[in-house]
Length: 189
Image (tube, rainbow, N blue to C red; front, top):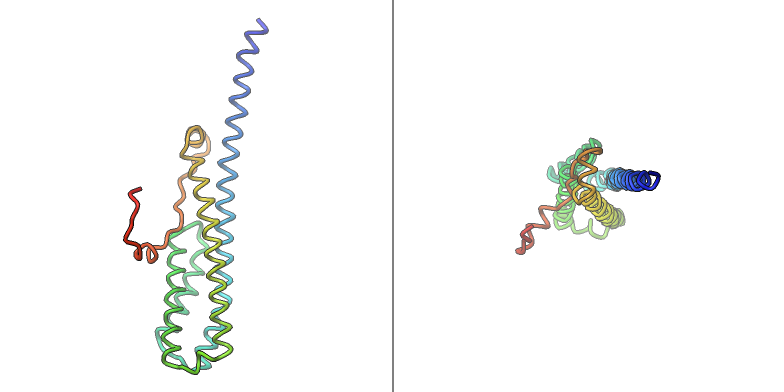
């Protein structure tokens, strides 16, 4: 009788342990996505600290061109809008605003050649470039964590545990539609 009881109890205990490990793994991966998203937000906010320098530069060089000022405002708004949870679409909007601002500054440099030699301009452009690299790194980490989380909830047995206990939804990774437009090749995923 004791052997029969062991043959029932041991597999049951092992099943419970496996379910707990899978459940904790899903929660841990979800938290990693959340942390990675916070890193993306931090890097975007770092860019926000550059905006006063851009505004000063625009003012110093009398670059009151509506497009440059509009792009500065759009970037600030897009970065502020990122606070409302994990949303790759809002991040894409912030990245597009950054690109639009960079394009506007390049046009301004063409219109004001002495600006190109300005120490302020060189510092601001270097800082923006550095921040863009940091944002890119944070996005790569975010996408990696999203992939691991999505795999954990979509692959068996994680999908079973998620469906019964966690009920976490798939998270959309960040994609850059402008970058995608530059490629002729599109994978048939």
